Image 1 (tube, rainbow, N blue to C red):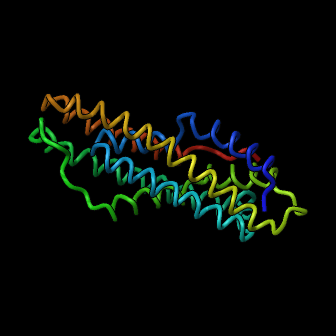
Image 2 (image 1 turned 180 degrees about the horizontal axis):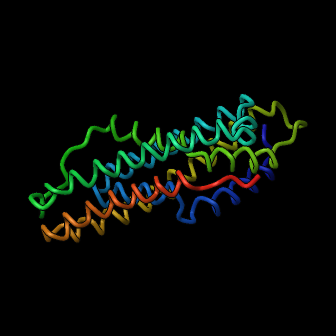
Length: 212
């Protein structure tokens, strides 16, 4: 089991990395602007589960492959980037009918679909994979037990921190959306802005290079 000192040190490190707005935060904020608080929070949960899925991969020894194989890294990166662009386009298309919803609550969105979208973005985020592969092992001590188990514990800790921090961003952004939703024109522009944010994030992810 991970020692208390290592767990605390990793938790503080993960908190600093997670609290600073990055791909996950921008994605959650984009969902909040396009669809409201509930879908954004569900997206944060799905994203955290996806990131934890990466930890499982790392614990099984595949993190090294992603960290050192340009082909695998680029394949995962482009898959995640393409998915973000698709979601952004969908958000922009839906913004056309947001104007008719001014003053009303955001329409129902299937929880399963929202969680699945967040999961795909989380598990295909190569930056998170490399960070876990590079940082988490520094807080692992073979003398404390199975390395794979320690990595899973650290990964679960980071996922819990991420879902809390991202949910705060989701609630804050969703609240701003509700306030702006009083104007049909502003609401439509807001939905489009969320979509553009996701597309921009996808394009940024696609062109982010490796540092070898």
